[in-house]
Length: 174
Image (cartoon, rainbow, N blue to C red; front, side):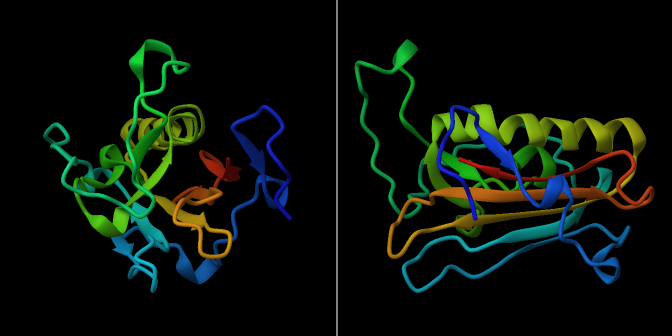
């Protein structure tokens, strides 16, 4: 059970222990983006991330991708002219090199993207760059009923070569 929002951008799941099985761990880098569901929503992104798949160029334009639930509008109550919604990568561009892949982009609040997802993405990126090791990584959006915008995402990661000693988390981002 995922608790209601309590003022924090995430809650730990399963005592912060990822659900990866031993036979899933691999040092062979890969990424897999699951098919969109019958409503056109993203379903899951999964992979073994390492230096060999990190992008070498800046992220490109993603404005042509309109994930489910995408409606953009400026609200005066939002500081600095920022938008309420962002296009959120399930696996960050900085970790995957996947730019405008519709199976990797969902509508999410700016808060979830910046305060929730980015700190865990940066921890993962820093770990890969500093150690040259691999990380099993999975992001699963959670939708309620036929809602086109996810209630949140389950994000989990576990470093491979050291069996999670260097990096391990399992969080639900609100």
